[in-house]
Image (cartoon, rainbow, N blue to C red; front, side, top):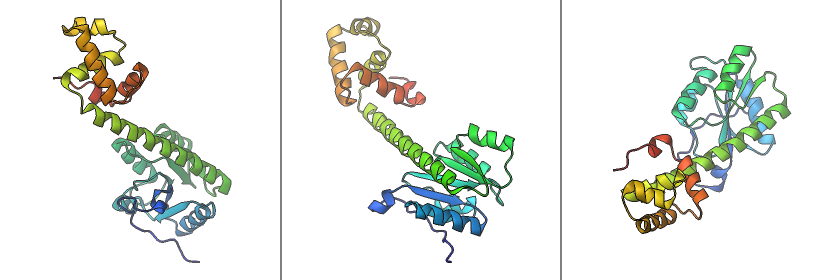
Amino acid sequence: MQQPQTRRMPSSASSPEEEQPLVIIVDDDAAVREGLHELILSAGMQATCFASTRDLLDAGLPERPSCLVLDVRMPGTSGLDLQTRLTAKGDAPPIIFITGHGDIPMTVQAMKLGAVDFLTKPVRDQALLDAVNAAIEKDIARRKEALLVKQYVERLSTLTARERQIFREVARGRLNKQIAFDLGISEVTVKLHRGNVMRKMRASSPRDIVRAWEALPADVREARVI
């Protein structure tokens, strides 16, 4: 039986196939890689395999919904080390750990960092597939939220300094007359700027304004308005 080959990730999606979710398997045991690879394919999903975390890092993470199936203990950078590194960068796909040597402290650490599941070898097929499906759904939601935040930041950049002030105050629940008093401008001017904010942020209600404000990264919200 031909062993699944390690391959370099595509830098960008260019076909319908590359838009589909991908299961990334990282295990230094070739037999385990092969078994997991065949299981994922049999379930109608796409998978790719790596023999080490270094091979994965060299290839790069895909720009498509995905999840990682990681062996905890591997030569060099371990699965837990990789999780810590990706979590620190803020772009970690959901992770499912598998191990033949798991212990409670290791499981607690993995779960605290956001692991979807922690499975012990030999892994039951259905348990792994259930975990993979949950992880993929989580990543789709994560990417959708990240795209929305990016759009909000881009829209924010189109606001003038005054409009950003109005945006902030409206999101805080301040009334037009309160904003006018605080900023030393007329209520009519506040209404004009507020209308511009609603249009540029593509908001149809005050609730949309609050949602957009709260979705922005803290450093963006707290940036000084000049």
